[in-house]
Amino acid sequence: QAIQSEIEAFVISDAAALEQFRIQFVGRKGRLAELFDGLKDVAAESRRDVGQALNGLKNLAEAKFAAAQEEFAGADQSIEIPADLTLSDPLIQGSLHPLTLVRSRILEIFNRMGFSVSDGPEIETDFYNFTALNFPENHPAREMQDTFFIEKGQGEIQDDVLLRTHTSNVQIRLMQHAKPPFRSIMPGRVFRNEAISARAHCLFHQVEGLYVDKEVSFKDLKDTLYHFAKEMFGKDTKVRFRPSYFPFTEPSAEMDITCLLCKGDGCNVCKQAGWVEIAGAGMVDPNVLENVGIDSKEYSGFAFGMGIERITMLKYQIKDLRLFTENDVRFLRQFN
Ligand code: PHE
Image (cartoon, rainbow, N blue to C red; front, side, top):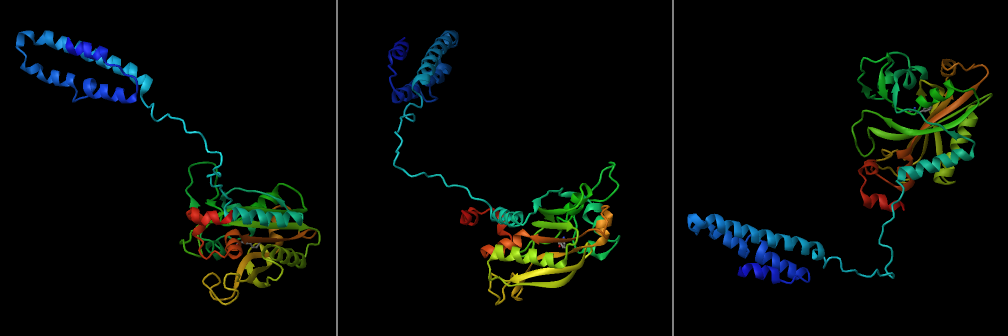
């Protein structure tokens, strides 16, 4: 009886009082709990009645607690602090990834020279990645590219399926579905089964370029890439072309620029050579044009492919390729 009136009389007017009430009556070490514990010492014949009475008290206390809880719990947390309008904005703004910045810059430079942008698939068949590009069956050039092949199901595709090793597949897709002239650049991700190091990765980015029209010459190719290099790296950048080989271009070349990381003195990025290769290029092989139904006596063209990572490393003095994919904010924030 005494406890019942105590429970009823207890005034819960704030969160502190609510906590007091909980400790005294509801909690596991409260007075009701104590009485429940004493139940085992009550004479067997009256245990039932006493137990019922205690249950009644327990329900009463819990109901009162629950009602008050709705009103006061968390009250002290919800004290409103007026906003300090003089504080500067604490939000750190995100920034574009350096590879995104450089890709945009590359597209911008070529857009101004009249190149449109095209896109193609990253999962590709052998035909688009190799055969149509004049790679003969079983030719060692296929092995040079450390291809990731994809296991095939029972589906209708007869050809090998793979992750493209270069963006040159888009050349074929572009020419297959339209008529010349073509003047397009094709940015995208490419994949090669290489061990990850400061200089190599199994995933990287290229920008492909293709120009097909009547009377396109090697001089046009050189002029275009020279102009690109000077726009990208500055007027004083030195550029050189070296003869090279690709199955889909003839003649083929590679373009180097002076290593901007060591200013030509030798470092791990240019392998002490003072020059770094930034693009492969050449005149589109007549076989490639014929493979997509373009008359190689009427049309000629040039193509090139450049690595975005390499260009970004030179532009921003980045010595380790792995930084691009680690997403360390201390690195990324520098490109605000
Ligand atoms: N596809 C070549 C590569 O990945 C680059 C290239 C593109 C060369 C176009 C010539 C013409 O190395």
